[in-house]
Length: 116
Length: 112
Image 1 (cartoon, chains in turn yellow, orange):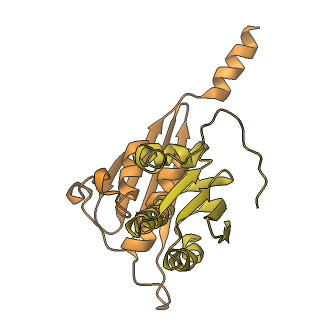
Image 2 (tube, each protein chain N blue to C red; image 1 turned 30 degrees about the vertical axis):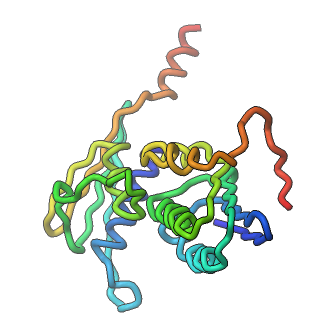
């Protein structure tokens, strides 16, 4: 699992790649803690290169989502596909976490993969 | 994909809950993993010698509250048939029927 956090004034970008599971989530949690403490207005989570997620990884993402929103911020999750998307659908998180924010861009055109 | 997810959750449950608290204590826990396959069916048995649990006593996740834990058992039971017997060892069995695509493909090729 690799991840990258790019804080910015408007949107904080979080990219998670590979497998987010009970082992690798321990590397991510302290950084998510710092991210939440910075009280970001918007967190954009790019999961387009996330291959696998388990319940521990989902727990970390749900925690991020709830805590940022509790501070008045918002979290946008993008790019879910394959196994991670199936898990989000199974746990009924797709309705809440993927659609709650109207800032999610419509899938009408494919976004470039450039990361700023 | 569903089998990998379910077995991963089962394994993590044993490590985190069955053998919870043993990390760093110098005491190790074993997990015996057996996989049986026959046409269109997979059966996986996990045996462990840690603390057992009663799966029927675990309520389903309250999705409305966006739960952060207790999701692993739900994933296991959703993706595979699950049976559990508490004891020494504890025995968790996950099984699933699936479409055997390779034999279906061979049959299809043989027909042409």
